Image (cartoon, rainbow, N blue to C red; front, side, top):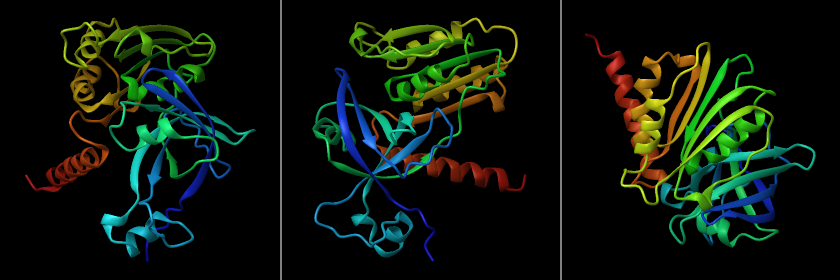
Length: 273
C-alpha cells in the first residue's frame, strides 16, 4: 500500500515583484500546517497538462498507480511567511526569465490561479538561548534568512552575509534583533559565485559563547564552509547547513545526486573495516 502523502491546494491571492529577480506570491492555503521552523518548505507540484490524477490527490498514490514519466513536476520552495489569521502562505521565487518551471509560473501567476503542494518540512529556527547567530546564503536562502531575522528575540545578535547579483536585489527585513547585514555582489566581481561568501565567513571574527549558524544556498560554497565552521567551534547541533541547489543541475538532477551521495555514505558506514 502506498505511503500517504496528501496533496493540498493553494490559491494565488496577490503577486509582487520584490526585485528584478525576485517575485513574491501570497497564497490562500487553509490546509497549511505550520511547523514553527523559519526554514519551513513546501514541495510545489506542477501536474502535466491534460492528465487526470487519482483522487483524492495523494503523491503516494500517484507514485504507486501512475508511471513516473507522468508524475507532477516537483520544486522545493521555502515559505517566507505564514499568516495563521488570514491562512496565507508567502513564497518568494527567484526568477531568471523563461528558464525552469516554477519561476515562469510565478511570473505569470494571477489571483485565482491554483497550485498543488505537499508539506511543510523544515528543521531550523533561531534558538533564543544562543549567544549569537550567523546566517549565510545566496538568493535561494533569502526567504529563510529573512524569516529567521524576523524571528530573532529582541536584541539577539546576528551577523548576516548574503550574496546577490547587485544592489537592486537587496531586501529589507523587519524584526527586533541586533543584526549586522552584509550584501555581497557578483556583478563587477572577478570571483566565482559563492567565493565571496566563503571568504567572508573565513574572515569572520567569531564571538565568544554559544553560536548558532545557518548556511544554505548553492551546494558548492555550502560544502566548502562545513569543515571551517565545525573547526571554529560550531557544533553539529548548532549548525544548519545544506545545499538548496547545485550549479548546472535542475532540482531533479540535484536531488538525484544528493540521494546517491547519501546512499554511498550509508554503505560506507555499514561496510566492515
